[in-house]
Length: 582
Image (cartoon, rainbow, N blue to C red):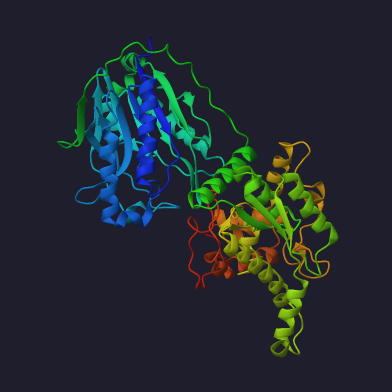
């Protein structure tokens, strides 16, 4: 069978609200797809306004401006068909896919399934679509739907294939990354392709947007559910693939399921069919070779997601340099390595701020890390400043024992110094707290939490060590000093302090947090997994008590299925405690 249809998937990195820039990027990709001789080129969900546009959608001027930008994009589609995600304003606002051909808007599909869980709030903004759209392009019949529409069995894909005769479903998507999601996504798409005996083409957004990272990995699956082409992870790409749509027709003749399937007639007008001008194919290159999926290991994909999320947050918000405190510990070391990989060594400044309790080894490790990374390194001792603080506070503190108050003053002095440098030079402060610390409140408001972006906010402490080891494995010699990897973690805010003075060992703490925060398990269920009851009670108490801190934390990159902030939203004032079994 011949490869009779050429499809291009434009995996682009756009910026929310940059309508001229996004339109320009889309038109450039359309031109490239045309040069490749593509019949159809598809772009991600809401590619034109950027995803997610959030409350920009409540500004009618913004929505109308995105529709004007769509007209400009349409004019660039001479000799090719393009599927472009945009926000459509009719009687209400719709999450929409425009079908453009030969300079005109040929049709519009409105998203039917509007997610309203986790990081998604689409019911807040959009009206639900009602119709199923297929378009004919010569002998090819193509169905179009959007992101969540393909995650559910049944319509719209079912009606598009079994009633509309679609041989190919193009699903335009903006699906945020978390570790392991690619395989889950591929299994779902394979099921849809097999169920409806159709090619499934899934085009995904790539890039960082606030807390979210989009991993791309656009893919095409054949009617047997096999991946026949896949775009790279965390990179822009135009994926071009040749499809044997006639094989779909032949396979359906031998598929008894289609004959046994009893379909209720759709209401009049529910299935919309658009007939477009058949492509005028001149001579084009030989069929493209198949593209095998590129498998990334767990640590590599997480690390690359953190790098991309950091780069896009910094660059898209107009910063040229970032600054962070280097304590000589594992968290700041990993954050600095990610920042350098994201932005380049010339764009990163590290500052050590030793106090009376800082060890000589920690300062040496901070300096070694900075030298290994090649970044600007500064030392600002805080001993005299701390003395001034304590002298000023001596009258109200008289008669009181030293406690965590004096420890937190040190963290807040460091936060003040970093923010002063940020103000003076326009640098963005990166915070270095991890998910374990943020989870139990082992962090200081206006101290180590002070900053503009929290790179490893969603990375548990045990994973911090794994990622650091992975990063070291990519360089020879390793950039993170071996002593940093081996010494017990410490905030060094009092003599001989260790994290385990206040917390369980991270190898124990992280599974408890995983169960309570990400799995929503109650105390009794967690205890039944073999954890000490008093320890579980104390961890849960700390998680619940410190919601007010997390609400004030900097945004950070989501890499787990349930991150603090957009995913997990609990009231600060809250007396409910989950103790009993469900």
